[in-house]
Image: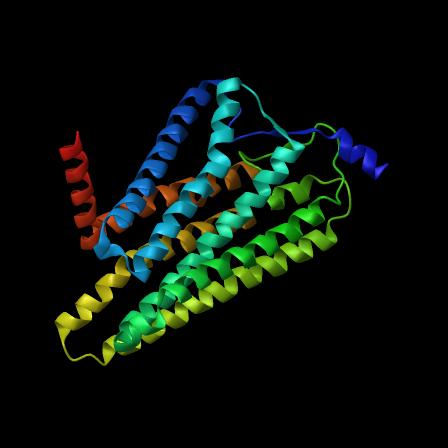
Length: 312
C-alpha cells in the first residue's frame, strides 16, 4: 500500500505566497527583479575577483565561492516559483520537489559553512598576521571548501534517502513557494519520527558548530584588537571584518526571524513570507554589502567596468 501511494503521488501543489490572482503579476515582477539583481550582483563579484590579481587571496577566494553559492541558492527556488506564476500553475513533480529539497539544503548549508571558514580566515589574518600566508595557503583553502561540500553533501543525502521512505497522499498541498524539508515532513501520510529526529539533530549541529566557530573567531579578534596600541591599526584591522560581520548578522538574523515567526504565529503563509528574507533577500544584499564596504572590491569593479567600456 505504501509503495502504491508513493508512486501515485506524481505531483505536489505549491500554494505560494498568495492565492490572490491580482497579486500574481506584482509577485512575478518583484521576484524576477530580485533574482536578476542577485545573479548579476554576485556574478560581478566573481568576475571582479577573477580578473584582478590583487584579489587572489584566501579572503576573496572564499568570497567568490560564497557569491557562487548565493546564485545557486536563489536559483534553486525562485525560477520554479516564477514559472508557476507565469503558467498559472501550482504543480511541482515529486522528483522535482525532492531535488529542490536536496539542493536547497546543500546550498543553505554551504552558506553557513563558508561564513564560518571566512571568520576563521579573518581570525588568522588579524591574530597571526606574520604566519597568515603560511597557514592560509592555497592547498588549505581548497581543502576547507572541499570538506564543506563533502559534509553537506552527505548530510543532505541522508535526509533525502529518509524522505524516500515516506508515503504521501494524492493532491498533497505545500503551504510554501518552494519545497522545504520541514514542510514535506508535515504533509507526509506515514510516520516521520526518524525524519524529525534527524532534522532536529542535523539542524542543531550544523547551526551550533559554525556559529560557535564564528563567535570564537571574533572573540579572539576583539581580544587581539584590544591589545593593539594604535587606534589606526585597530580600525584598519577591524574594517576587514565589517562586511563579513554584516553578512553573518543578516544570515543568522533572518534565519532566526523565520524560526521565531514559525514558532509564534503557527501560520504557514506568514512563515513562507518570512523565509523570503533568507532565501531571496539575503543573497541579493550580499554583493552590495561587500562592494559598498570594501575598497578593494570597489576598485576591482571599477577596473572591470573600465576594461569592459574600453573593449566596447
